[in-house]
Image 1 (cartoon, rainbow, N blue to C red):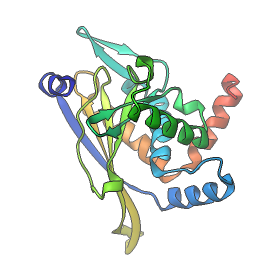
Image 2 (image 1 turned 90 degrees about the vertical axis):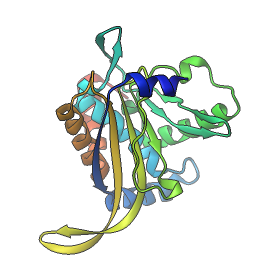
Image 3 (image 1 turned 90 degrees about the horizontal axis):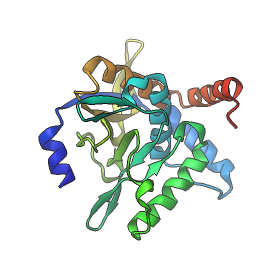
Image 4 (image 1 turned 180 degrees about the vertical axis):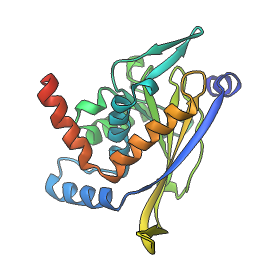
Length: 224
């Protein structure tokens, strides 16, 4: 019922970018080797953290539509779509911009397990800033997702696959992953959505940028 209402009432626009993620995959492999079983990072963990950092960089996206008004949000709370036998649920990683990748990874796994078992509290899946829906593990190259109200945007993530690209005027092979942003056009126009996707792409293609941003937040606001 909620999906049907969202499709009928929300004016959707769709924006897509291709992200070269060879660097991300290298960082992921290196961090997983160091983890010694404490966590096992997925590509989606990087997407969730990048989505949160991009909200900080383009705060207009961190908004909701409510009673003919736009409500600005403060926390960078990222909902993660989790498939269940009879549908899906979107548990929320609160303040994902303030958490490390390992913490995000373990939290998503715990939330997903509790969601599939029907043990989530309402506050753990209601609200949120933006959603991430990843079908890359099923080989889906790209898709457009339906906005999850009251949020105003959702990121649809496709498979990371080898593709030909042009680098410095020459043909090369790179690992490319498509990300499509679905927006509520009442809240997010095309230019703002494009800025957000550019920020997301930058964090995914240079994942250590988020580490630099974390250091800046720690020094400026005392975040540990």
